[in-house]
Length: 311
Ligand SMILES: [Zn+2]
Image (cartoon, rainbow, N blue to C red; front, side, top):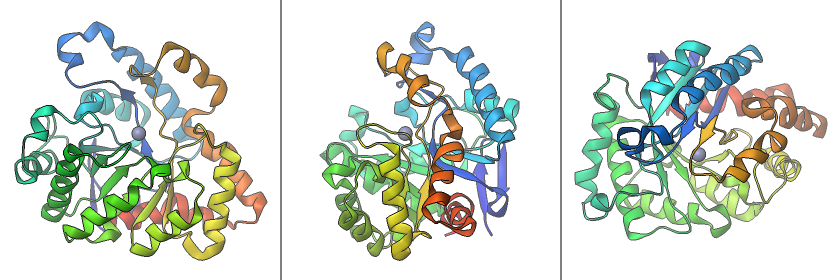
């Protein structure tokens, strides 16, 4: 048992319940809300976020991890309003995604780490809302700027005990390089989850990472390029090989995302009419049909996230 920071305050890890490990409410870019607020559908995101997450809550989702960082336009007051309105438990992130500020590229990890630590220990955007996870992202590979972020995240993790959740380009095996850097920093890999891993179907890559000691986020559903059924078949193979206690599932869904084209936003409801419930309504029934037990499903959705946050 341990204490997890959520957007509405600290919570016991045993109370997280059914958890989606990598989601978003509203995605945008840094600074736009302050400068060009008319570009961001803020009120829509709050209203629609409350609607979709209330529905998810009613069908058994207890917690989502919102992995939006400053460079994803994180607006912690939006997330707070959605959490209050939907009664969904939401954990928010510090860290940095792919739009690494040029200023961070010129900084050392020891200059960036205290910024993350402050968001974990004091609060985000002038609020007392504290981050419960550290997000990092590398794509198509680990750039020089990306390495600054990984090392800063490692040091913020070591100072606070808050776990690290990564974004990868899985088909480029970016998780391998992330693990090398975390090992070099002396990070306990049991506190790291390598995300977007179900964009790869390479069992050698996936089991190799888990054998090193990290968790895997199979956190794109329904996803693109690889169909959701194939993602679920790979998941079942991993469970059958004994890795079911090292995996977490999620959608990487968002209510609104200003960095997607109008066309892509328009096709989203037809690709995923279930939004935060796609896993509940499609993936878990298929997994049970393939032969998984309810206990194995509970590991993925309840026990594994709890253990990941407990460390
Ligand atoms: Zn994401």
